[in-house]
Length: 218
Ligand code: DX5
Ligand code: ZN
Image 1 (tube, rainbow, N blue to C red):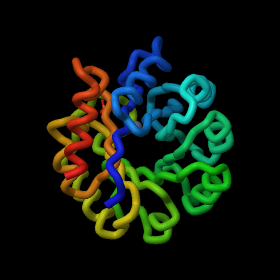
Image 2: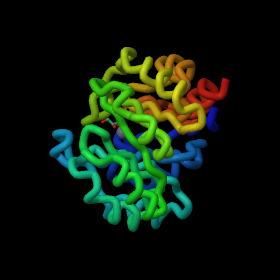
Image 3: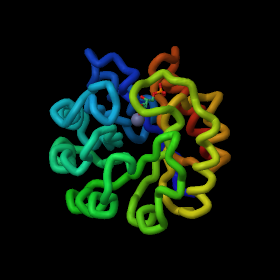
């Protein structure tokens, strides 16, 4: 299985202190930072876009921004996110009719490509061709749109299905994941853990990052 990676979702941070919050997570042991980009169309909320990501990248050199694009027309933002310093561009398969061309465009901009599936989308929506072309597969364990929701255990079998088909790929889970819910994700084969509320609202984010990492390392 690929290496364990913890990717705190900055949606749960204090946006007034965004860059300091991001630095705090890296110092606390996080490998990646999960940047939730919402456009008010694919999901009802609006969060942040390339200008904000660019500020984060400039203030924390070398940061790996795991950009979760909850947007319509995801092909529209590839250039902007690449120029802002995005390292991984993860789009929703529900939002595009041509995922293979989009993966190619993301790779041409030197970013890793991720493909996300929402709770009602089966794992088979990620065909062998798409899964092979992508670098990461994201199984949403809440409906995309906001942080702090309850973990949907029924999504976990999709992690196992994808792990069986793609043994070497990064498989990420996102939504309601924390020290209590991480174990079933880890057992199913997820190696990239996103957690917002569980990390940012904890007394010791470092301790939560460590416990999540231990859960996916065993
Ligand atoms: C939901 C976002 C998630 C969310 C995770 O639409 O994609 O990344 O912020 O936050 P928690 O861990 O609080 O569910
Ligand atoms: Zn997310």
